[in-house]
Length: 76
Image 1 (spheres, rainbow, N blue to C red):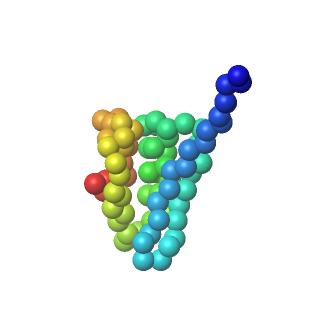
Image 2 (cartoon, rainbow, N blue to C red):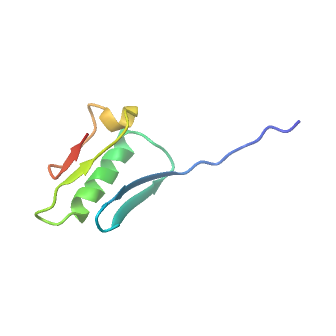
């Protein structure tokens, strides 16, 4: 019997529900540092008067104390 091997890739993404506009980051892992990079990227994509509200589950990297969240993003 041969053991099945998998390769994983992770996608961090946000979609603007009214327009369908999206921002995504493909990464080899999920962790607080990579989540912070994605949030920075998303924050930079927003217009100067925009504010994003992200609805996320309770994954550890979504709520870690070391997570860096830009001022123009709120996490629920």
